[in-house]
Image (tube, rainbow, N blue to C red; front, top):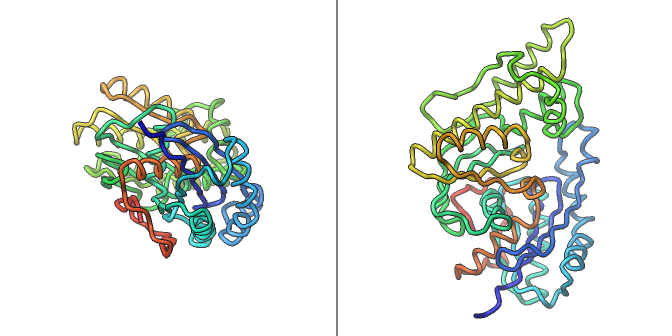
Length: 339
């Protein structure tokens, strides 16, 4: 049997320059250069700052990944890159670099969907995905429910956020509570000392018959509640807000599993690193007889390994490589796995 190809993946959809190298579903390297500290003083990601940081970090991050894997450029068999969705300027840096590496090394190029890559990365930890599975992707820019018959070719959108994504709500509520950016890890930490039942915050769209999400109303409810109080106990507010978010997310995910008679749920994206989301998802999946897959936290946030993993699936499936004139598409739909 021929040895599986070595695929190098490049991720630059937001503020992290990620480079990963895989052979099949074996992770060999996963290096990340983050510009998060540069954005923190603005309370959010500044696209122009992110793009400049990607330019500066690209070459050293690729070289670091090769060193980590013990490989040379000449060992690489294919290049995969996030072609969308994401910040337009940031995507352009990654796509341009991937085209240059592909042309320079004479190896095929695969432009991939960022969201599908968040699904594919779980295979690096837990092996091949069940076919089909339900995937819930939760991050700063996306809250999506997907039916995934085959991550390399067939991803179906079941529901998405109609306003703020869950991670965006975490960032905005953290700001209200005086917590640093990015808000997710800080709310998760602070909430451990609070009561999830302290404040009855609303659950948007929880029983509306759709598989869509809405977190804008919850964010506003938290801000108004805080404004109305003479003093607040931050851990209680954080815990109650967090519980409202993960309650809706896990309920909707299990509704999707039941509706489509699927018994495997994958949770991915940056918010999947949240400890309460992971524990409540496990509790509710166990009760419903659904098998839960959640990558370790380091594979949930944006990284190059997830892009390489999806690229490897495309190579193995015999998918035709991308042309060197592929665009960076900031609004690439989830149904387009490969461009």
